[in-house]
Amino acid sequence: MLAIIAIILIVLWLGGFALHVGGGLIHILLVIGVIVLIVHFLRGRGV
Image (cartoon, rainbow, N blue to C red; front, side, top):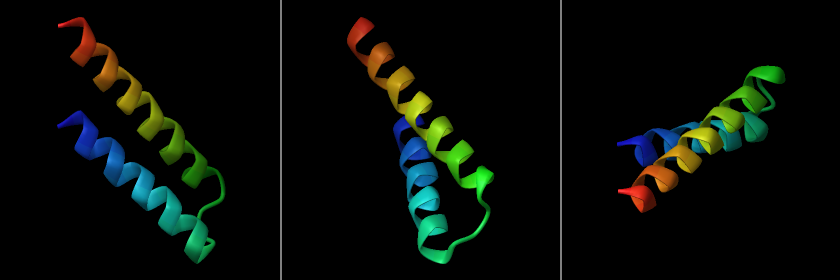
């Protein structure tokens, strides 16, 4: 589930660059997506 959310956030971030919308918001989406992916992989390997 976390991986799906992260992928959606990253796709929205890439789409924002294509449409030139939102400046800082787009970078926040990228950071949130990367953090969610890292947490997902760390939990997956630890369990």
